[in-house]
Image: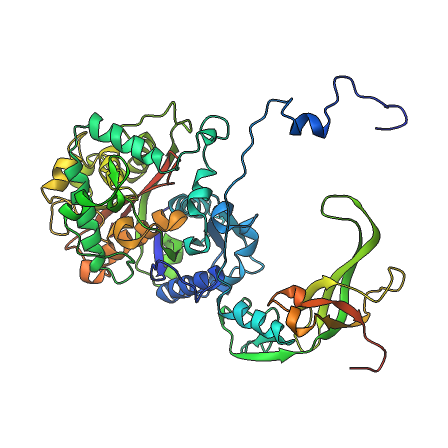
Length: 383
Length: 173
């Protein structure tokens, strides 16, 4: 049974949204998604899935607080404690059971409500092995960036090319919080943070909400929708231990892509996938993820990036939306945002960052430091 | 412990053993601080509380007056329409007598807590709060109550700007 995305709703991503509570933020994105899908959530949606981590929200059992602003009061609601793409996988499976015809996936960030963002991220470190060291949690990204650059013989200049591309792409996306005309030299001269990472290598936090409406093929037909099909989806987790994981490669992304490609019957990703939206919350992650999901050979992603092959007009546009570097780090909403951007491109609704003639795209997510969890979705239009 | 079991086998630990570090342990206090944006509905609600008033939102579709106020109606899934002041009097919907505090210590004078359906809001809409000026023998479901507000200068834009709800004498408003 095919499952398709029939509605897309997003708020703008902003460094802070003091005018909105997180509930009001969700209501806006949900209202947009239902208008886009032309469905009434009170009568035409069978299941509501939110993606949230209590520590990011600041209170426990967050799933209890989600139904009203999604139109899910007194209905079937559940929360996935994970990235939005993992929620999308959940919706995909719920519809595949045949018990649910129309499902909604929501993910958001209200990062501006967090006074001690680093403290919250630090709390995810192992309490016995890593926390007593007291290092800033982004050191984990610095360690991995160093291993990746050395292990793949990638130049730091390639990271600067990624940052400049994504910040500039953000200028073409009206939803992006951090679009800017940044050139690679700015990046290489920005303040050192967690070597080899510099200030501009790190995505800044943003608030925002993404809601997608999914439907079975039969329901999509009944609702006169023009779906973007979820051709395949997969997810995986590498070792949680900092001492035992593969620092050079993103094994979780490789395993997730393997599952997604198997379901989507993608055999040669480089020729079958036209564009990608991958997690770039640290610049090196974009390159590492591209190699993991088979869109570049090991050690090649950086060279391709430096040659402009991932630009809007390049042979494989990557993060045409601006990615997290351009749009902002929206935490658990990151993967769902990317799926939404891929779907908009495939519908031809991406506005001034629209790519020409794209039929198949991939969205890839990661659950941020210090996690080694990620998901991949292959989306496509037509038969 | 019970009548039959008066001592567990093994070595009992005291609180002092823990605080003095005689037990191997890892301590970590998360640095987790939040400041939630209250948003449009709650910001107005809290500002009105400081002025000694309770405000709700009315949905013109289902005609309900929603309290606490929200900018969207969860029943109709549409934006709510108007601000509506409601009364600080109401009826006890449900209550409990709490003999333990949050640390599970026995309280000499038990706390009376409950949910009040407020006059002017739609049925089953109101707030949870404390009760005062009544005993645990006197409190009952269906009892009419009225908010007792803190003096203006002590209000902070919090639900605690109301001290508690006290019995509303028969025939009084």
